[in-house]
Image (cartoon, rainbow, N blue to C red; front, side, top):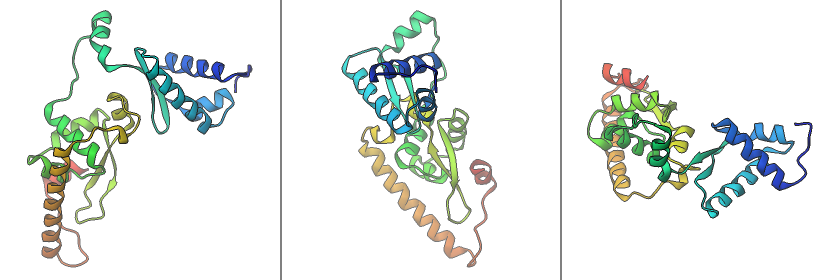
Amino acid sequence: MTEQQMPTISDIGEAIEAILFAAGYPVKYDKLAEVLGLSAPDVRLLCEHMATEYEKTGRGILMLCLPETCQLTTKEQYMPYIREALGIKRGGNLSASSMEVLAIVAYNQPVTRAYVDAVRGVDSSYAVGSLLDKNLIEACGRMDAPGRPMLYVTTDKFLRVFGLNSLSELPETEALSIAAAQAEQVEMQLDEQTEEAQPEGEYAEVSEDDSRAEI
């Protein structure tokens, strides 16, 4: 808690804005609450209110309210001006294959690499590895199924990069949903075939290629 108490909501909001601007990265609600002498739920409610006000006033920045953190960021449509003004070169964009994999994970998480392969119809090990390196997806455990394949989900960084407060803000995509449903049927059929082929109580062997990709 700071030595000087913040007497009004306006003062607290300005303090939050100043902290987030100076930080330049996501700050936990718990940390803001500790500094401001408030509860974390109250800080989050205030941040969500501020986020709404940013949108209403038509400013060039917005506030992202993630599950555990919040951050000030610029609006995507002004990126060309920012790049030109600050001399920022283009680079680091995701490839088409990485974007496909990222979309499949985002809309169907948690998913295995085999599931992603089934949706795309091609091997996705390189794209999955690239997204892991960029911290846009992460492993969240293993599926309780033969071979114990790794499960993947998106990260908070994914939300920040795409300007989302939560996964519920993802746009609807009928085509991807249809493809995912088809992939699920394929995966179920493969699981059934594997279970029939292996002795009861034992796991199916994992191929050398799959074991490298899923670890």
